Amino acid sequence: MTYKIAFQLYSSRNFPPVEPQLEKLAALGHDGVEPFLPNYEADPSGFRAQLDNVGLKCFGFHLPYDELVADPARFADIAHTLGSDLLIPPWLAPEQRPQDADGWRRIGASLRKVADSLAGQGLRLAWHNHDFEYVALPDGAYPIDHLLEAAGPGVGFEADFAWVTRAGVDPVEALQRHADRILAIQVKDTKAAGVTEEAGWAAMGDGIIDWSRLWPLFSTTRTDHVVVEHDDPKDWFETAKRSIEFIKSMKD
Image (cartoon, rainbow, N blue to C red; front, side, top):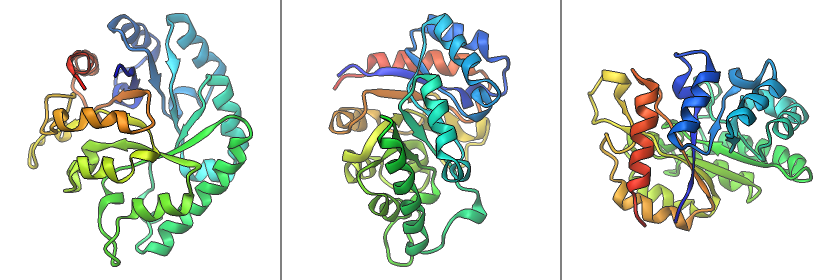
């Protein structure tokens, strides 16, 4: 299967400005981007114009969980402006992370409420994971299990298998566990434990993840695109280039 390819602009946050980045991404063959709040917050219409000027789409965008829950209508308007139907809260600060199943279920319930308010506008919601959602709770389950169960089928999942790997969980197991909820996949890679260069992250194919096991399973999910990301690259363009080359070499 051929997937559209987006680039998470968090990866290039340390190399402003963004407009020439968009031009380079389009030239490399990326179909779109996945922006985060600083990219669009000040001027969503202006950012949309930058995308349109180079022929890129917005396949989904990251936004703060607490701000979304407080004012979903604000982010619905931003979604329509950006031309994206997928809203993705990606993070909880340490002090926000529950220590038990009930706490994670409350977060899931809050996402369900937001998703219900968005559905009538043709918009979708998906949670993005880090490693902390894969640290087992006292009941033996992972936080992500409780969150998605309480959120209900109206809330999807953007899977980041590099963070899953760092949590010590088999990414194949993680994919199979929630395949029917996965609406987007970040194809970030990670180096072996103990590697500190670039905070241990890598372009897709340059790390320890066995993509030959994972890639064929993408077709069992609900995604039509993959998202290139690297949390701390020395050269964002090289990450984008190496990743898209690797993606194009993959076969189901």
